[in-house]
Image 1 (cartoon, rainbow, N blue to C red):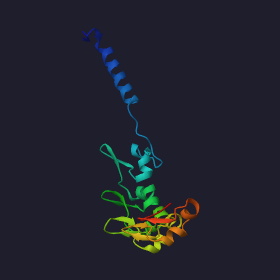
Image 2 (image 1 turned 90 degrees about the vertical axis):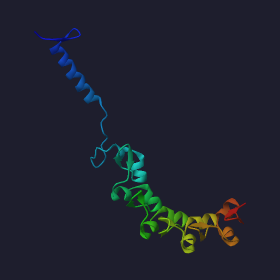
Image 3 (image 1 turned 135 degrees about the vertical axis):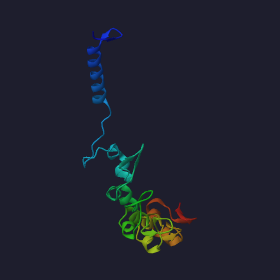
Image 4 (image 1 turned 135 degrees about the horizontal axis):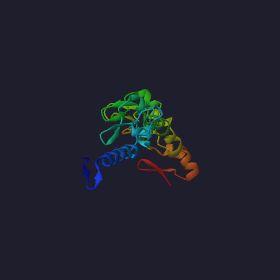
Amino acid sequence: MPRDYQGVPEADFRLLLLVMVALLLACGPRPERSVEGSADPCRARPECGGYGWCTQVGANCVATSPVDCRASAECRGFGRCSLGSGGCVATTAADCVASDDCREGGRCRFDEGSRLCAALDSGDCRRSAACATRGECSAVAGLCRATNQQDCTASSGCSTLGRCVLAGAQCVR
């Protein structure tokens, strides 16, 4: 004689259980597919393109591939194009020179001490947008800074915004 479970015949109970399991499997979370066909949900997040954090490790998205670092905004913007122990990092002068940070802020040299792209040469500062627009033409402690009145006066910030006076390490009104 077939058993029943709280008034439900055993055969009906098994069928109901199979339907419930199938529904749970069908409705569960599905990993998003990346362009490469990976099932890693991190690939669909903005942090993948921004920081190279394209691989899920535990509950976090992290950088695990030099290819992801090279394709990231961190590489284009700040020269952080290589995979390091803490994620995408700067490791070569070539990556620093190719970065937006070099053109904009004069941070074109790889600094071994900080492991970042830095303004270590005033020539790099002089070629940057920071010099032309804000008078920040001298390398000081890894950054381009305004250090003399002539650079302030020669900047477009002076002619367009009236920032012609050196105060501290800035050109001001």
